[in-house]
Length: 440
Image (cartoon, rainbow, N blue to C red; front, side):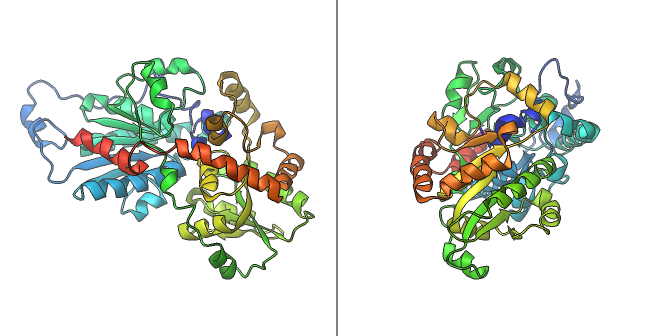
């Protein structure tokens, strides 16, 4: 779980890494009340129940699945899930909350995903009333639409509150991307019974963990394996941007939340300044843009020298990865994307010092990066909080910009990536199959 997957313990992967979001909004629990629950049907209301969507006896012409993604990585998972469900059952319709990737799949979001893409105790606190209002709005929309299934994707601080609030409606519920309580405060598991009918896990060790707490869970594999990041065209990217043969590309991924951008961009710029004298050709930063922070990143990097190549298109991002010599990334799903593409990397993360104290008090895993966690050793450098300095990041990058350091990382990626494969088929298809079972 990268620092943003465990350091997302401050609201939000994450790394999440995978990515993951937890402390401020926290997981729904008995001593932390959700919004008012959806109304139960009252005695004598049988005719209404027979005619309202989602009610007993009602049969919708086309099944409606309500999807909730709370951040960019969840948006990408949601988009792949929509495609996999449509392959299996073309007549399914969708509603809920998502971002650009889900919109490109024909999904219309209830409100902008950026309203939920917040992180950290000190960062979430000023937006608490807005988040509560969005929570009430989501629950009300589910009650009005009465979908056939509700599927929440990651973002447990928001998602699990929604699941608890809509429980009285009797709608089947699934949660996609297990809460990473195996890495922090395991006692919260006792609050999970009754929140979902299906728990879909991305990591192979998670079903056994939840089974110990009498919570059935299914390993469906990690959809990053379907991302196509191993199919990019390096020559096409270099030609498009008129890069010289000696130019070396450094992928720079500061995050998809505004607070991540504010904390990481100055750090990354200073790191690049330290690397300017590195031998082996000109170092060109390439920065994939996340929709929620696209404008902020564009404005903040205008004065960088050299100015980063900003990438929005998904295929161009794959091409950039194929052309890259190395990556500097915040923790989370981005680390797995780089690994799939075979890009050696340095992983970092910074959060508010108070948030960091909270995280360090509860985290019990030896590594924050999923790659390191699955490997049970540090195969990619993790430089977090006070260790995340320009000098230390530049020094770590110099190692992997050399052939020996790069080769060592690439060789080490194979084992953890293999562990993310589901028993059969593609990860999104396995998730789609488990969710469609709830329609039966």
